[in-house]
Length: 81
Image (cartoon, rainbow, N blue to C red):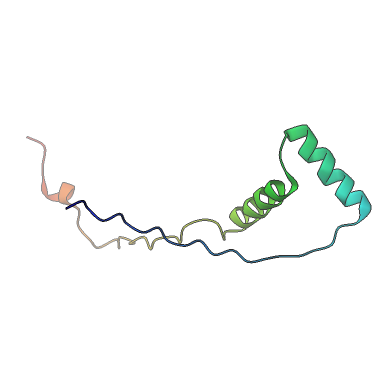
């Protein structure tokens, strides 16, 4: 009996609308032509860069355990011969 294929997780997308001035649209088109990309890809890259710069695109920071001054280290017990 063949093994069952694992089903893929469905990716959900949300529609976003915003308006650009004529000058902004010209700048976007010029950028996309120079870098050989599409406007949608450029918007997604810009949003991702903005979010990662402001801390929303990274993984949550793990809590680091602070070692108090009174806690001993294993290296304190082991002595050099």
